[in-house]
Length: 256
Image (cartoon, rainbow, N blue to C red; front, side, top):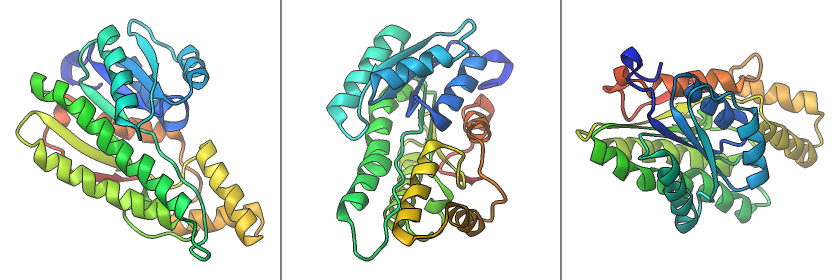
């Protein structure tokens, strides 16, 4: 459960990137333990599809379109969810972007997009939601990072750099919010069984001329994986960091 003895029931969780993949899996697990969940994403249709697919039970789920890279857009979405669900106690930032691109010739646009979503987005989401948590003297912020934030990988230099920056941001935010009842952590999985990984594989195949099977085998071997990780496995780790019992865990980057 999110909290011991059912104390998490009724808390409000905001999930970015909640339209699919890890975000949707996290939303379902939070709903299962009685949290009300607000989904934020850029596309209304994707959010509506996710909302219909989630089993809510006694909890509530709401959606709001917003862009984590734009503070005005995100804060507007957060305000709408706060109005309908209540103050935000939990933020799970699952919004992310991974684009494969060779180092030479360099593609600055790919690099910049990685930082905009994976770093600036994490900064905006955290600082927009943290005031509710500080006021309540209880809060959980969990960012979905990557093992690419802990080591290097081929073909994804911009992604690797951004995920390293995300881990640094998590550690700094944890120190800034220390003693206020708010924890900040990251879950850093290997390669996931999600559409984002599929798109990365497509680009690797195009850029290198390798077969898809060879590209996938190379990715898995580089991370020491036998197979792609299911989103629900990541969601379980994320929700474990939202427990009351996890109050002494902050500034960590949990590798999966």
